[in-house]
Structures are given as C-alpha cells and as structure tokens.
Length: 474
Image 1 (cartoon, rainbow, N blue to C red):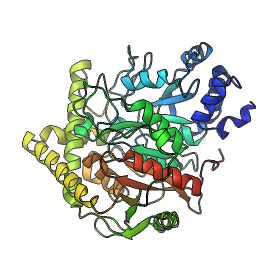
Image 2 (cartoon, rainbow, N blue to C red):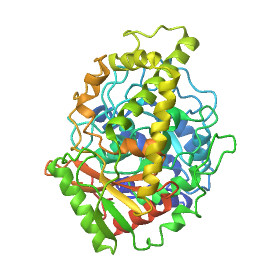
Image 3 (cartoon, rainbow, N blue to C red):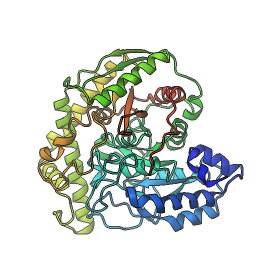
Image 4 (cartoon, rainbow, N blue to C red):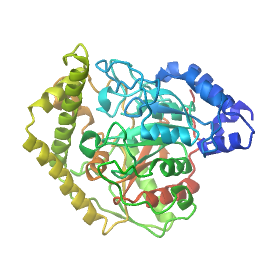
C-alpha cells in the first residue's frame, strides 16, 4: 500500500488492510509518526509523545480487533494510559506517568488501536478553545490563525490534519462537538452513562462530562461506540440500553423523522450568516431525504441554565484543585494556574452546598423540558457554534474575572451545553465550509439513549453529501 493512501482510508479501512496483510501495523504507525513529526510543529496538537512505545506495540501486533494496528491519540484528560502522564493542560498537575490504563483505553487496545501520545487541551478543559500556558495554543489545520476548538482541540486538529484517523475526546459543555465543528469532523456526545469513566472516575463534573472520540467517518464513530459502551456495573448509573450494534444499525436508514430546526439562539438572536447558511442547507438536505423539518426550539431559560452550569463548573474546578493541593502540597496561585482557572477556583470555594444542589436541580428541570420536547420531535437540528472558528487569542486566559473572561464565548456556544445538562446525545456533522474554507458544523440532538437514530441519520446524510475527501492544505 503506497503510504500516500494512508489518509484515504478511515480507521476501519486501515484495520482491514492490516488484517488482510496488505500493510503492517508497523507501517501504519511509522507513517502516522512521520506525519506527526512533519505536521505537529505547525498545529501543536500532540503534547506528549509515546512514539517508541507505539512502535514496540506495533511490532508485536496480534490483535484481530476491528482497528487492528491503527494509530490513534488520547486527549490529555481522563484517558489514563500506562507510561503517559495526564496533566489536564495545567502546570499544577505533575507529569507523573500512569501505572495503569483507564477502562476505556484498555478497550481501545483490545480493539487493536495503538495510542501514540496525548493531545492539547485548555487548562482543565474549561474553554471551547485549546490554549494554555503549559502547552501553548493548538492551531486549526484549515487556518493556523484560528482555533481548532476545545477542549478536545488537539485531538480534532490531529485527525483533521491526517496524522491519525481518530482520537479520544471528552465533552463537558460541547468539547467533542465544538472541535469537530471547527475542524470538519464527526463528533458524537453520547448519553450520560453510556461510556464508563472507570476505574478512576465515575461522575465527572457533576455528570456533565462524557468520553468518546472524533472521527472522519460515521462508521468509525459507530464502531468506536460499539467497543466503548459495554456497561461497567461499578458505575453510578447507566444510559438506556443500546439496540444492537451501532455499526450494523447504520446499514439501515432511519424511518421518516420529524426534525425541529432552530435558526436563532434561546434569546432569539440570529447566528452569523455563514452559520445560518449551514443550518438552512442541512434542513433542506433532511427534507430531500424524506424527513419532516419545521422551525421550533424548546423554551429553555438560558440565563438560569448558564448560571447553573457555571456553578457546577466552578465547584468541580474547586474540588479538583483542592484535591491536587492535598496530593502535591502546591498552593493554588498564578504561579501554577491561569487567571481564569484561579478565578473559577475562588468562585467555586465560595458557593454553598445549597447552591450546588439548586444548580443540579435546574439541570434536571431542563432535562424534563427536553423530554417533553422530544415527544413531538425525533431530533433537533441546531448550529454547533454561532460563528465560524474563533481566532486564537480571543479568550483572555489571564483574566480572573469569570464574567469578563467568558464574555466572548457566551453567545459563541449557543446550544451544546444543554445536552451536557440534560444527558442527551448529540452529533456534529461537517456539512458546510465558508468562503474562507473554514468548517461550519451543525448538530443533531436526540432524546436520551437515542444514539442509534443519530448515527443512522448521520450515515444517510454522509452518503447523500460526502465530506471524507475534504482536506486542509497543510
């Protein structure tokens, strides 16, 4: 197989070539590492290299899993892997290599995936951009002046640039879907409880955050969900049972769906013209595929939800930093934390338990509201972001005043946090590029447990309007 064809295949395609002995796992890993050495200095996506370990695993590859010998990357959050540190993008987090794999990483390895290292994130995954004092900014392969999104920005940049066909990602407020939108990828935020965070985590960020991946094809996304979603009965709760294999399920198109589409945010403000164009085209495509589309949006109290969301983020940040203080003896300060993170920490410490419980109850109220909404609509179509990808430096990570720091991004991320609040699944699809050749994603939201419907529609849309061959020129 000529290595020029490496990124002409998705991860399942590469795994099939390995199993057919048309290429070896070592050849795939060597090609990925050569691309990493050539491209990563431009995009700063990979921040920890486990290249020698990956070569060693590839040499003795014996996996007969669906991704046999396929290189991948792990986000620098939660995906603990033997020999690799997980620093959450923070100077406060010591670079201590893990002595065991997370359950999810074990499942990746069993399926044949070979991790090459860790990817860039904002400090503690707080922002929808991937810029930190520890690592510096990750850059968008489509335009190096723009962000690849956050917090899974390094993973998305590496996949979009063709270094690896897929990468681990997490989503606590849109952190899978936002980078997928910015980089022209498929990004599925799963139902709460669908993928275990064991053995070291159970209920990250008060239940807001989930794990999964970013991919270039829908079938890779489906296959990854198949291998990732086996229940772990030590988890605190579980998503509704899946209805068979997702990879098999996407071979069947969905039944005729009733889809709500939103052309303004919760407060009625319009989106950037490029984004509005993307949503309109996606709605029209769904109609052409035989689905019913009508304009509607749920009556979410966006101010209350934003307040509740920030309470949970602040208290989770305070808890995490206090835990680090106990483990490392470091006192939180501007010497080891960014200004925004320190501001969140101080805010979180001041929030009483009653306010924390109020915030959780507010999230549950939104979930009830969305449950009623989906009695009328199978899916909800929205933009993933209200504007094209931001320029790097838009967010001031040194600003300790939380309201000032978050001001540039409050309207930028109109809907994705809702699904983290409610626990619903949602998928970003790369259906539009603007005149500057920047990707503009749209997201489809399903009721809790509705990943199969999302993936079936995504596969149908992918066949009707393929995006796989679109590549950034980097």
